[in-house]
Length: 264
Image (tube, rainbow, N blue to C red; front, side, top):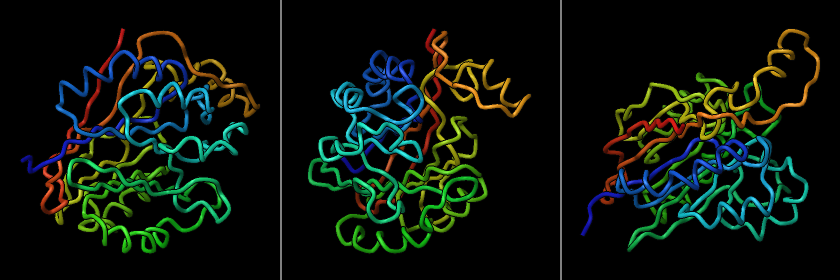
């Protein structure tokens, strides 16, 4: 019987290019890294902003067990009343009461249960509830069921992400950051056994500005005028993510490995 579980965590899926990358590359990556379960951040899947029921149905057919999200998850209004019909998606647990959906998802793998928790930061973001206090509230009942816990912290600044990593060290198996679309090189296992990285990156266009067509973004920086942003559909594309290896006995991380692939 296996003593470890290998989990693939996929960086923010950006628009049609990101979805195309998953369709063409996911199976090979899962095979190459001997993956048991897969988690992917879906909040930019619809043109870079949100997700639609149609796109959920498209991506839901792939071998992905949980979709995490963030500040754009409710950008497409047609998804609001459809959340009960998109059960693989979780939204940040510290959205104020009344938001659709849930922030925790349990996955059964063989005889083991894994919990995936989504939480969102506040620095340079919106007025969400405190992510630290939110996790203080949700972790005790989760730990009664499993010590295999993965946290996607969707946040802007590395200081807030590092603070959360140290806050969670020894309490969860892994905490990784999403949202900035740029993979960081600070992957490590913290002293008490929690795998950490500030951001796992992005799956989508490789030569845009965080996945978007460059020219409108440059115009916005130069003029401070509003522009319409959309994903860059020109190749090459990229796949960003991490592979986690966790002990099934202790719930602690044994390995964290960054994954970067260019798709021409």
